[in-house]
Amino acid sequence: MCTNHTIIFYILAKKIKRMSFKKQFNIDKLLPGQSIDCVIIGYDLEELYILVLKWKETDNWSLPGGFIYIDEDMDSAAVRILKDRTGLEMLFLDQFHTFGNKDRRSKNNLTNSLEIINRNKELMQWFKQRFISTGYLSLVNIDRCNPKPDVFSDACEWKPVNKLPKLIFDHDAIVKKALEHIRIHLNYLPVFISLLPEKFTMKALQKLYESILQKKLDRGNFQKKMLKMGVFIRLEKQLDGGAHKAPYLYKLDKEKYRDLNTKDIGIFS
Amino acid sequence: MCTNHTIIFYILAKKIKRMSFKKQFNIDKLLPGQSIDCVIIGYDLEELYILVLKWKETDNWSLPGGFIYIDEDMDSAAVRILKDRTGLEMLFLDQFHTFGNKDRRSKNNLTNSLEIINRNKELMQWFKQRFISTGYLSLVNIDRCNPKPDVFSDACEWKPVNKLPKLIFDHDAIVKKALEHIRIHLNYLPVFISLLPEKFTMKALQKLYESILQKKLDRGNFQKKMLKMGVFIRLEKQLDGGAHKAPYLYKLDKEKYRDLNTKDIGIFS
DNA sequence: AATTATTGTGTGATTTGTACACATTAATTA
DNA sequence: TAATTAATGTGTACAAATCACACAATAATT
Image (cartoon, rainbow over all chains, first blue to last red):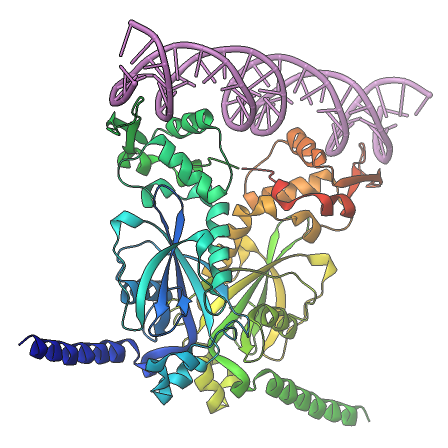
């Protein structure tokens, strides 16, 4: 009985796999030579993480990426690709750079190692093209999302930025550029919306800024600056069990935040 | 005698045209669906200009753009394309955004109006593709360059930003994005190197910043801030014939500028 | 009730930003 | 030749922001 179920499940799984495979790689409907790679940056109150996929039956780690349909806007493609490959939905994706070196994919050739691609000649041709890839980034709260590997991957995991495995192609460079981007644009990015839980302490907020800027900030001044923006509501105290005063919790005042001109969120130079 | 010469010249001209045409459009060696558009921003001590091309025998104005060869890095392609289409060389080109809306080229269809393309079926197919275009920008001193139209264009002209003709496709949006980009990154862009003559007055420098930021700045404070950076050398006075004190001329102290960390050029928020 | 670790807030020195005024200059002109 | 003029160069006073550091407040633990 159990064996039967297993067999049925196996066949079903294969079918599903074929279906999604077909669905995802209707090559004729894709723009040739164009790809998108997503740098999904997470945070868990301790450090920054990047979401990476491990290609099936290989040791190749990569960013979640994909291709653009002929009748699809590039920005929509980025959202759809992220959904297809990781299950993540409803994220704001920011385009940050386009990578077009001719040898950017020469470092590590997927087609040699990935059986699922190797079996299909047409697909192999497709993967061997030269691609120009546009990078999109998003900031997310790790606890609020549940990434799942797709048919091409057997893992979809958060890795700390400074302990990232070697990524295929030029994906290391893509990650680096994305991190630079958020550092430069930090003043205009409401990172406290994306990267923190709904309720958070000032210490957590400060650690987040410190993780991104990679430098220590003065606690007192940080707090004053943040609160002066007037977009945080102080809540009841946190129960944390330490032998000391428990910190206040804060949450975003969404109305106040909406009224605030984005240009005004200049926080640190 | 004169007529003979004219005829010979005419034949020669046709041949040259065919040759450069062939050279520029060896379609098999181009990446499909990929294009590059350049926003070349100039300045003449009065206002900002954009360099635009008028397509032969039409009223279509566009940014100088082109396609990428299969064995060419995208950044190099941008430089080469600008050279091919305008004759401008040795510019620093900054990638600023990639435009990928599916209907971005629907607004104005070149293939209908441009005879040189219309005559060649294969070429027409090529132009009718969907393209994703990456925008590059450069800041140049109008007096130091001499743009020339290429075989596809009968004009290559500087137009004041606020008197730009309607451009084809989404080129208006591309220009707008480029201007936003330099405004946001003004603090990190050494515009005084690119957009001014070697020797310039403080007033000229201030007008440049005002053109880019589109707001008035306080003269005294501007001057003090600029000079405090310590990268300008004061020269002898200008002879300008006005009934008043002639201003000092300044030039960049290249050594001092090199020593200055780019991060430190924070000038205006 | 004292201890302790941690958070919240205050202060003064310093730097930066802003608005405006005044001094300086040199070609023009009376 | 000296006053005029228009533009530039510099100073000053006040406000605001930044920075480093200190101290007060708090609540669980001892």
